[in-house]
Amino acid sequence: MPTKEPASWIPWIIIGIMGAMLYQQHKPVPEPAAQSIEQIVSKTHAETAKNYATVFRAAADKVAAGEIKDEEALYNFLKKDLDDARIDASSGLDKLLDSNIPTVIDDATRGSVSSFLRRVGGAW
Image 1 (cartoon, rainbow, N blue to C red):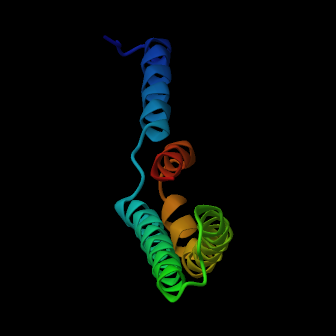
Image 2 (tube, rainbow, N blue to C red; image 1 turned 180 degrees about the vertical axis):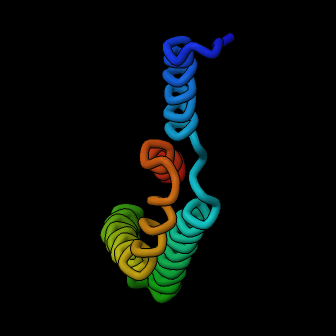
């Protein structure tokens, strides 16, 4: 324990500073930032699922109408349209990020940047 000598307080001050730095480094992401990220991801997944469902309905309609007659034609139709659907979902994510990124960044700056980035990486 420190005594009344000023020099005896130095190690305790250093330990306190190191403890505060360690706490700051491992402080969790503020809840609003985490919720914003989760909302962006869930909206993007929902948009992708909607796009994929549209593609499969269109394929079923084409098969029923006789426009697609064999497996290779079906495969080519699905491959092209599913790739397009994925691009649409990606652009939807860009729109969501553009509209939400100021809030996410603002919330993140209130917490530790490293833990924020770890949380973002886990969300994706």
